[in-house]
Length: 145
Image 1 (cartoon, rainbow, N blue to C red):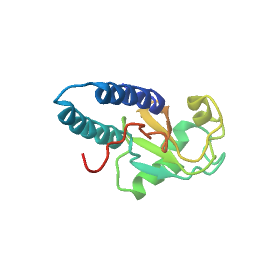
Image 2 (spheres, one colour; image 1 turned 90 degrees about the horizontal axis):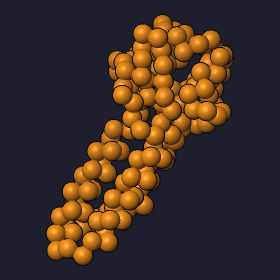
Image 3 (cartoon, rainbow, N blue to C red; image 1 turned 180 degrees about the vertical axis):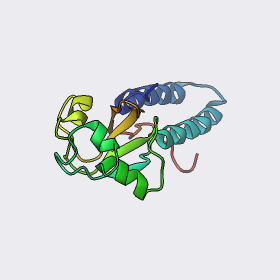
Image 4 (cartoon, rainbow, N blue to C red; image 1 turned 45 degrees about the vertical axis):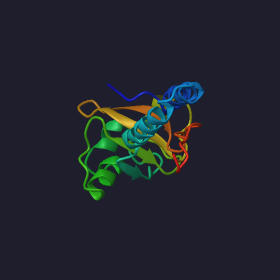
């Protein structure tokens, strides 16, 4: 099961934060402190395991991208992280495979800081999660809470 998109998570987190801050309960402070832990856990789940520079049209398909000598495989090897289902990678530029597999997963042109999750390694597949800068919760907790 793939992670929801970052836009979906932002909306959910901001709605929960608004509900917590609007509550007029004595325990509101405890709820906000616990919510801060949830925000950090969410950010950790979406943190890219590796960053990859995709040389445009170097890898013909996702299979080549994932395979020996492929840009993604090389990035995982260099980071000493196994390439497996559930891993998240961030691209640093606008490069794509020859068949535009990343663009197809995203639904539009690849941009720097796009993040994708690996959903299958047997028949390589990815889903687009959003920009790595997209997790910007409106309800960030003040440091003195």
